[in-house]
Amino acid sequence: GMSPRQVIVMVGASAGLLALVGGLVAMPVGLSLHHVLNDVISNSAGNETPPVAYAVFNGYELVLIPLLGVGVAIAAALIPGRWAARTNVVEVLHAE
Image (cartoon, one colour):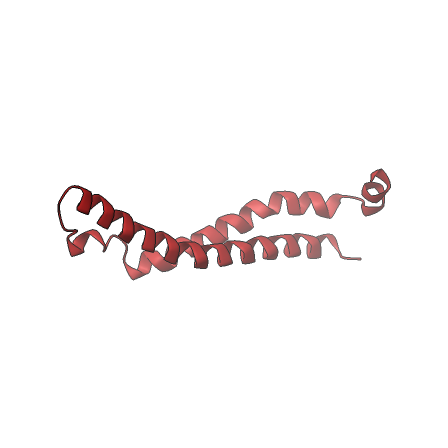
């Protein structure tokens, strides 16, 4: 069996990993979609997209945003993690 602390760490780590993978996938997809939609909107208006329209984020923000997302996910996972740590497994399995 795991100690209550190990359960909380496991839940937090899994939430953090999921958020990190999600951020690493979502950031390039979101930036690509931003470029495509800027081009579509500009072309529909008969204009060309100026290069400055693509540079809305700097490198610092592109690193900080996913890290903050991971931090929020870990903090949010503490609530169910604490609940899981206090739950009696035998009672839960018996109810199933």
